[in-house]
Image (tube, rainbow, N blue to C red; front, side):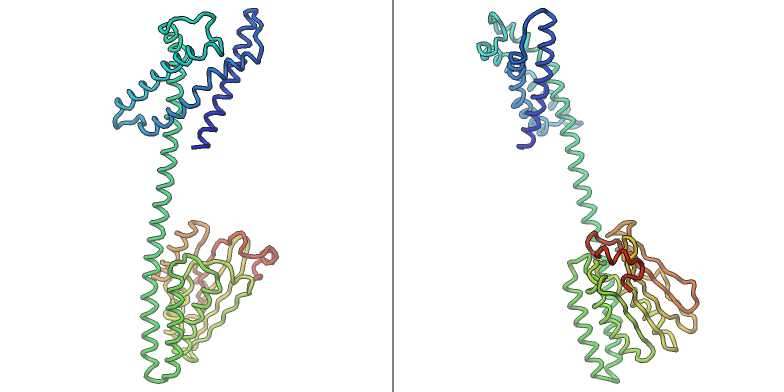
Length: 363
């Protein structure tokens, strides 16, 4: 409200300066000596009442905007307010005539009202129209802000739904692995249960986070890989190489685990020969790149890039970053399957020196 009052006062001050200039020119053209001081006194005396009147008009227009609903009633309210302004200005002229000298000889009230109509009718209607335009654009902006808030809330709800689909998928595979291992090695099964508890605890901590540092995401994935290495034994090996410079870069929460799980479940676990999985991370330009490579099953089994895990990660990338992030799959090599995740860097996530080193900076 304070800013509104200042803006209204500034507007009428500028209008008063323009009016003073016109008074000087008109009186000078008639051969009358009319100083700027006198012109400013008359102009500011004339425009000063419009400051509170304009503020009142703004409040009325905000409360009773002219629209399809109640058009005639609200229009009548606006016209009545303009009529009130005209009467007020006439009374104001009579009351302040000794100060400003509007009239050499004070005329009757009726003549002052007629003069006030001529001076203030068009001006009052113009002020009401301008204020109505301002209020209209304020309402449009408010609707846009509400729409943005609704879209963000919808995106968050969809994001939570995606995450909820991922958690049961992981739990089923992890607990099934423990059940199988309990029959042959209780100690290893105990280690797996501890790792599962760590993952569940991590998932609970991350439940309210849409992003988190890469180091936290890798800790989650490392627990998963440890579980699968115990279950598969020599049939699986893994290699995670990420430089410390990349560890604090934010990535979507629980986004790597479903991709790694796809590699293990759909390729390595199905292979009759030992398989491998490698995770790499580096920065290039304004993006963090994450690569997950794995060996294919010897008999040609392949990971389907349209599986739930990849669809979920793609959807989360779109919700969080729109077109600034993407997930790509590379299926050209017969023995290797590669998934690459590209996430935009925050302004302060990586030191400039690390960015300058290019793709190898965080290998």
